Length: 604
Image (tube, rainbow, N blue to C red; front, top):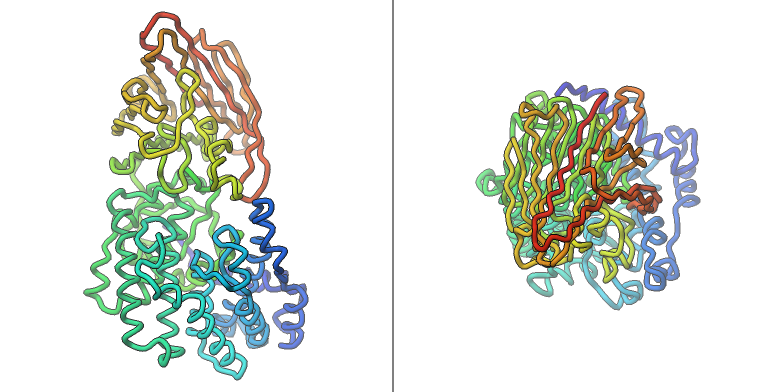
C-alpha cells in the first residue's frame, strides 16, 4: 500500500483547525486570544435539558437528544486533540495554548452533565441521578476525559480542579457501579461491541486514574480492575478469532477493536501478557470484507458507507506484518467524524498512523475468495472487480436482521443487489416492532418468500446447511421460515468464471419442496434503481461517468413480476427510495419441487 504519512498527518492537523474554526465561528481561530476562544466556545456549546432527555421516553426519538449530546462530544474531541497535539502544531508554527481554557470549559460541562448514559440505555431516574448504570457512552466519556487529563503534560489550577472533579465523578458513576458486582452487567461476559467499548474504557479510565489519583486508584485496586478487564476482553477476541468475522459488520468491528486495542496497549504490562492476546484471523477482517471502491460487506446493522479507520489498520499491520489491507481506499475517517465524534478514535487515527504507518508498506492484497464456516459468510471478488457476498447464520445474531441466505452484489463499486444496513435507531427499532421495519425484515433482503412466508426471528430460524468454495455456495434454510425440515428450501449460487459464466456473473437457484398441496415461490430482490422490464429480463442501468454498465437479471419466463418503491429510513434519519422486485412462480402439482433459476450478468 503506497501511503504518504506526512501528507496524511498534515491534512489531519489542517482539518482539525478547520473544524475548530467551524465550531467557534472564529475565522482567526489559530491566532485568537484564550479569552476570545473560550467565549466563542461558550456561545456555541449546546445546552441539554431534562426535556431533551425525556423526549425519548415520550416518542421514542433518539436523534433529538443524541444530536445535542454528540455535538458536545465534538467540542470535546477537537479541543482535547488540540491539547494533546500542541507540540505537533508547534512544528507548524501554530500555538495551540490559546485553547487550554476553552478545553477546560468543555471538560467542566461534560463533568456537570447529570448522567452520561443515553436515554435509550437509561431511564428518567438517570437524569435525576437516582439510578446508576454504565452504557457505551458513559464508559467512553470517562475513558476519554481520563485520557486527555492523564496524557496532558500541563498543570494549571483549572486543570487540577478538572482532575479533582473527574476523580469524584468516576467514583460515583463508574467504579461504584463496576465494583458493586461481577459481572457488572451483561456486556462484561458478552462478545459483541459493548464488551470492548465498556470494559476497554473502564480499563483506560482506571489506568489514568492510577496516575492522576493513586490515593483513590491504589495499586491493589488498579490490579484488580486491570485483570478483570483483560479477562473480559479475552472473551471478545476469542469469539471473533473462532469465527474469523465480526457478525456486527465492519462499522462495529472498527468501533470495538479500537477500544480493545487501546485497552490492550494500556493494560498489557509485559510481552508475556500481551502474547496471550493472539488474533491473526480477526486482524484480517477488514481486508476480508473489502469490496473495493470504499465499500464493505454490510450485513445486519452495518452501514453501507463505512469509512476506513487508518489508525486501526496501521496498528494491526504493526502487530501482524504483511497483513492484507484494503488497498484502494480513498475515504478515511479523521476526527471521529461520524455522528458520535469519538475522541479515542480520532486520537488514534493520528498517533497510530504517525507511529505505525511504515507497516503499511508491507501490506498484501486480500485473496479473491473468503469464507467462514463458523459464521457462514462468504465473499467472492470477481476478476473484473465485481463482488458478491452471502450469509447463512441464524436470526438471533447481534444487531440481527431476518436475513438468513441473503446476499449483496456490487458491480464496479456500485451496489446493485442491496443490503440496506442499519435503519434509524428508535425505540421501535430495538423493540417489539423491529421486524416490521423494512431493513430488518426478510422483505428488505434478497431472500425468497416460500408460500409467501417471511423469515422469523430467533436462533432456531437458521441455515441447517452452509457450504462455500470458489465455485459455488449452497445453503439449506427452510428452518428460517418455520419449516421443520431445513432442506425444503435450498439456495445454490454458482460463479465458476470458466464454466460458461462471464466474470462478474452468477447463477442463483432456489429450490422449494412445499409441504402443502400447492405452492408458490417468490423471489424478493432489493435494488437502488427501478429496473426496466423486457419480457423475463430486468435491466438495471447505471450511467456512471467512469464505468457505465448494465446488470441483466434473467428470470423464468412464467414468473409474474411486480416492482414496488419503498422508503428506507437510514441510520442518520435520511429517507431513501429503494425498489422491491418480486417474481412469483406457482404450481398446483402436489409436493413437487419448484425450481427458480435466476441469472445475473453485467455488461459495460
